[in-house]
Structure formats: C-alpha cells, structure tokens
Length: 483
Image (cartoon, rainbow, N blue to C red; front, side):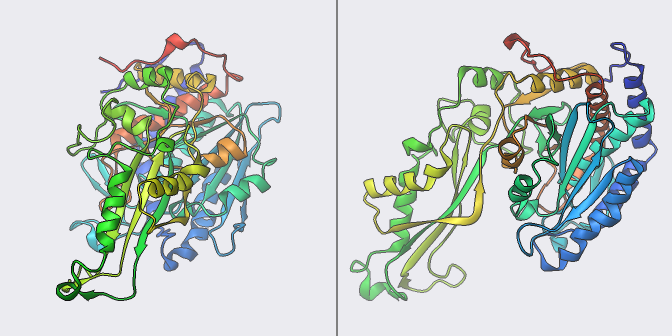
C-alpha cells in the first residue's frame, strides 16, 4: 500500500493541499461530482451524442472552472461538423510559470445492453472499491481529479503560484478531429512552459505512473480483389486463385510465427541502452489475464516489447460470407491491420515500406489502403528531461515511493498536438489502471487509486507553484520500484 509522506520541506501549504484534497474525496464530493459528469451521455461515436458534447462543456465544466477563477471560451471545431473545444485560463501573473493541461469529455459508445445486471453506463454505481460508469476512467474522472487538485492548492495557499491553461476536446474517441489544426491556429494562446495532463492506465494500481508520450498507430487495409462474384468450389477448385489464401500468406510474410516483424523499416532504432535501463526498473506488465511470453520480439523483455518496440496486429479479416458460408471460392479478401510504433519509426514510410515488402515477396495482387483517420504519430521526451524528474520527485515526495517512469504509453494519444505543434515538454500522470474495462462494458475506477491520485496531483501542483523550470537531473537518479 502507498503511504502519504507529509511535512517534508519548507512548505506547510503543501500539507494543507493534501488535507483539502483528502477531505474533498472522503466527504463524498468527488463521487458526487463524477456521477454528474458520467450522467451526461457524451458518446462522440453516435449521432445522438452530439447535443450532449457541447452541454458537457457549458453545463458541467464551465461552472466548475468559474468557481476556480478560470475564464473560458468555447470554439467551433476547425473541421466542419466535428465536436467543439473549450479553452480556459487562470492567469495569476504573466511572469509566472504557465502549465497547459488537457482533458476530453467525450466517451465511446455506452454499450448499455452489454453491461452486467445492476449496472448502467451513464449511472455511477458504487460496489466496494469500484465506481462503475462510462467515462469514469476515460477521461472524465481523470480531468476532474486534476481540476480538484488545483482547487485544493488554492484552498491551502490562496493561489496556485502558476498560471493554468486548460484545453478540453469532445472528439478524442473519434480521432481528435480538428485538434491539431486548433492548436496550430491558437498556438499563441496555448503557449506554456510545460504540458501536464492525465489519461491512460497506471502500470500498477498501487503506484503512480509517469510517461512523456505515446506509441503511434497506423491503420490500413490489405485487400485482394481477383474477380467479381464467387464461383463453385467443386467446378473451379484448383483453377481459380483463392484471394483469402493469398492474403493469408501475405500477412504471414510480415512477421514470423511468433509475431516478430520482418519488415526492416518497421524495426525501430530508438530502444537505446538508456531507455532499456528505464524499462528494466519497472515491474512486469499487469493485465488481469494471461499474457503470452513467447509472442513478440524474442530478444526483448515483455516490458520492452510494449513500451520500446513496434507491434503488428490484424484487427479484422473477411472473405466470402462467414455468417452463411457457401461452397464457393470468393472473389475477394480483406484484412484491416495496424502497426503500433515508437519514436524512431518513420511515419511517412510505414505504408511505402509495406508495399515494397509485399512486392519483394511476390504479392503484387495485394493492395494497401491507408485509413483516412487511422494515424497517430509517436512521441516521447528524452529520458533525462528535467521536467520528467521534477514530476517524479514530487510524486515520490507524496507517497514515499518512486513512481513508475515510462518513456511512452503503449497506446496512442494526440500528444503530437502538444509536443510537436506547440513544442512543449509533455508529462502524463494517468489515474486509471489496466483492468478498468476502458472502451468496454463495465468501465470503472478504483476509489483507492482516485484518492491517491488526487493527493499526488495536489502535491505536484503545490510544488509547481514554488519552483521555476527544474534543473537537469543526473542519469543516476532513475526511480527504482519499491521492494
């Protein structure tokens, strides 16, 4: 179990922020506010969710921000028909440090009929240490924690001691349309010294996690179209090429039998000794279900495979009519595939490299079509960026144990908007855990994780109000996991 370490250093207001954050959670106020946010069905993937997206900003987030001294404005999305965005500011003194933070208020489909008895996606339900509800983990609970942690610092100190700019989007679950264009257009208003936000899961529920970017994702279709219609497998078997077999062999050429990537351009060069040293300090990946230790790059640890390497997956395959097979050779076959990739992989060359590989392997019939909105760039900070170690030391000061530090999340986030477009160092402090059923029925958060996260963020924001850009740290200060 984590422990709260108070009274370290010359800042009684830090202890006051701890106390205010703890009282907010223990009084039930956090649970009540989260219930109000969850109740708004902000399903950005469904047309019926559209009116709720703006309402979430105006009726739920805006009143909260006003109480914290923020000024806010809602913008139409640069992409026609896409959800709105909110930009809010609390400027205490232009000479102070400025932090940009972020959250997304939209959620994936509710999938109401698939939740177990007694649960509903848009009603927060408490069962023991779990709070069930769509968006609790992704991402309503996470940005609520950060805002309320700031409120705890203000309550203890009377001010934050730094400036805050908040960007809330309502389309993250549909690929963040317009976010990059908005950041480019509003670059001056979004200028800051550092980006600090929360999304994704911790590596372990009991220990805070830090990461500075995310793996990228590129989605594309492989398709073999040989003829119109299907033809009798008895009359033409042995005379007509089978597109499903051709496609299966093409897919098999991309990796070996254990999933090791065979396309040279897809094998990154960024798993440096320093990054491996960081990853070696981490505990094994926890999933809540059995993992496959003999899958993926054989020379790497399981942690390195997901946080330091690329992985290829076939998301879906189809040929013929699987729901009602007939004795016929189909004229076509299609697979939707994805490459998750780290920094050190050329985004622009992913699909061209695949096409070159298929041509070398003799699969000229296979067409590669990139998804229109299925690309997320990979990002990460240098391992010894001073902001990373500033945040790491702050979290350790609160809990008494070193946090887990990842170079990047295994999944994808729109971090390139902040790291590349705005040019900011990016620090992510996730408040969920791997077993939260994110994007699935029965999504939930753990109350002990939420409480600890709230207190940790209060400590981090209190520390930000007392320091300027932190000094660079020595390489020897890699946090080690607790024994």
